[in-house]
Length: 159
Image 1 (cartoon, rainbow, N blue to C red):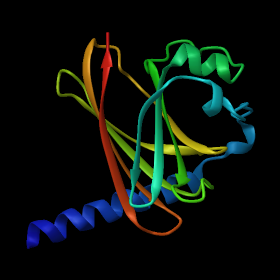
Image 2 (image 1 turned 60 degrees about the vertical axis):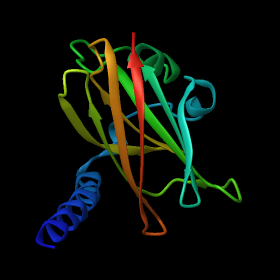
Image 3 (image 1 turned 120 degrees about the horizontal axis):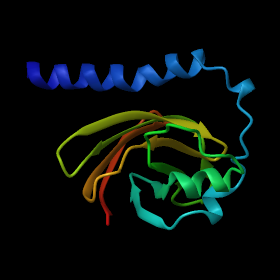
Image 4 (image 1 turned 180 degrees about the horizontal axis):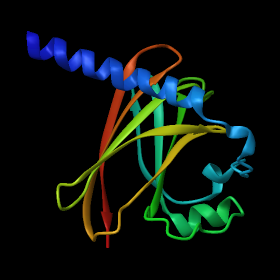
């Protein structure tokens, strides 16, 4: 029982952290054209309906992602891929754009990367280092405006 309480406490803190970090960020100075790149960039990597929410994940190379945003690739960037997820109400198809999303990626060497995905005009996204060839486990936890915590996981292979 104590373990369960500890897991719930950690999960609650983890989901609350993006609110603080998001509030501290100044997006005014970031000029990015995120517009509609979810619709036309990258193939759907994973899609599933979780408790009434349709989650659509796309994993794309940073080169593809930066090109879609009409931006140059930053020098010295160690992240190789952008993971984006779009949420829609499974019944109405209405976009769900408010909430918190945390993704953990486990590499073929068992290394882990955990990041909060930032809301980006219709989807959530973050950059990850998927430079090693092999199978990556992608685990997402998301809490949207309805307050329910949902999760999704899938495998992504880098050839």
